[in-house]
Image (cartoon, rainbow, N blue to C red; front, side):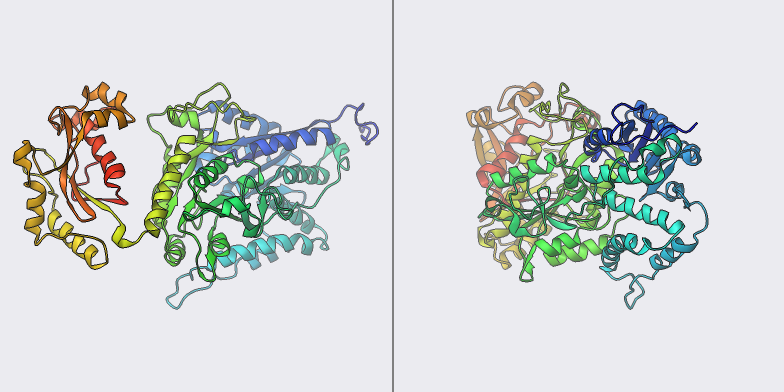
Length: 634
């Protein structure tokens, strides 16, 4: 007997058939938006449940993986996206394969081939040879890339292809609308992609409405027609974002033009910083980690242009918002995406990134949230970043030329769990969902300070810039100052100082390499019983007053000023000044006689002299930049 269809009038009293929609994706950026969409869906479609699973959580939580497998085994419509890492798709591949022929529909996109071919939507089956509409689309896709004269892919060809693909993705459903048969299911596949790529709460709900309305089978057919299906809500593909944007043209704090940014955000006189954001996080309303960085930069007097682009190629955003009349309009570029500049976790086009960064010619930092663990897990871990995070978020962006990798935010586990990543011990009391991103206060502020210094350096005159050069001395008291394997440190340093003087830096250049060495190694060393020239002394009471980590240092090395590079009343800063260039000797670590302890000591704290030396460079000498010569030291 066929169950009676549910109408809008009686759906509150009828027993609704269960409809389980399962969404599996790489990370949890859409989790809270999906849960909000689920609440709305349960009102319009009684009996429907929508569950979301993030593959990034499986490594540290086997129960999360088991929950995902169980949901797949019972899912009526299964959607899998962004599963291209083996650690993400291999654990659930058998579950997907087992469920494929028993669910109403399985949609797999932007994933490894083993996953994508499991797509089955009505008459559209990706495991079979392409025919009809799909064969035609494959011919469109396989057009050869533009090549340069030497046969290599032209820089920008991939970006152009990406833009063309997005344009085609919007056009295909309109073209396929009038072709009967399998083409209608192919059209449904591309519409699903559109919903996903514009993944706001509204579009997630519309996507589920659409798939249920088209593919619900058996008793679940009664859910068809209960809710009106909507075309994907369109958002700017390239644009700007600000948490306090207030412009009638903005959609969800996103706008297509930079003049929509709030006035105070673009009035900073210190300099301008271009930020690159992930559009997917903005669409999901999950951008607190970005907001913290934006606020920290603005608090330091910097003008901020937070921009985004569709997909993982950031060049369109750079071209659209970081130039003015053909010239760079920013003083520094900071990527908050956690991925390479051109590409992402699946591929990296370092040559294309190199070309656009050379054209922009500003400092480029790539920083990241922790994506595959929570902030408290990261803060409490001796390992820090997971291997996949180190690879995707640090190593690959460095191939582009990015520097300054650091964590600036991530997810909190729950309200009552404190993050131990810094002294703030944040508990995220305002947390709505454990999947939402948050800014790390200390690190966002540190990032802003670092970027501010880079902007100041870029805007300063060469003659005003102060540069510190630090040489190593290991083992101490053994005539090893400024030594390194196969490198003449003092000769190299002299050549650099000569070039700096020639380029307009204020350098009081010694007469020769030997004179430079003599100034630093000898000088007044005998007067103080030191191993090199004492440029200045830091009084013990000054060190006590200014050392932020005094408690930790004294726990390891005893009361200030300590025994290293000290006369008992002050700390020696060893080195010599040559105009606006200071050449200093890095203080010893304190464990030189115990190399195994030096390698494996977990609670290793710098000596009083070591910490005071770098504080003096930063705050007293006022170095704009610090260069380390020879053996790397620390």
